[in-house]
Amino acid sequence: MELKVVRIEKPDEVNLILGQAHFIKTVEDLHEAMVCAVPGAKFGVAFCESSGPALVRWSGTDPELAALAKKNALALSCGHVFLILMRGMYPINVLNAIKTVPEVCRIFCATANPVEAIVAETEQGRGVLGVVDGVKTKGVEGEKDREERKALLRRMGYKL
Image 1 (cartoon, rainbow, N blue to C red):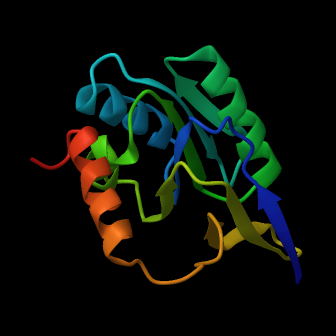
Image 2: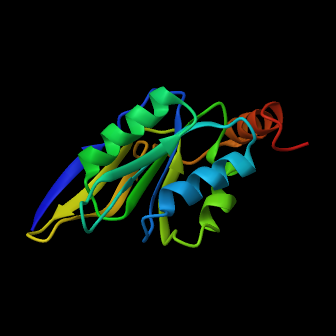
């Protein structure tokens, strides 16, 4: 077995959901979940098929994000792994809808941070073991940090 680190390439303002599913209709169902959860959603989704022709299946409403999702999925090349890249919205807006898609088995991360996937490669294929989401923790928040966090959530409209 060989371990690899695959960095997900994306613009800083793009959020992502990286997960694993189990069936070829995953792409259509993820697409449907996205547009039903956020009308007008701008996203690209790609899914690594793990049998038969073993292709990257894809969809989306934004050509740039769809192309980037395909590129990243091919770099991962891990069976049944999917990647959703989204712009102008946050994973919190769609995550529950994504988790209720019957094919979805797990979510590795949902973030805007830089992401590295830890990938194991065997003679059979490749799989995601886990992810590195963002940077190493630098300390514990103080009172000023707490106030800034609460203010940010209110500016974003997530808290009253």
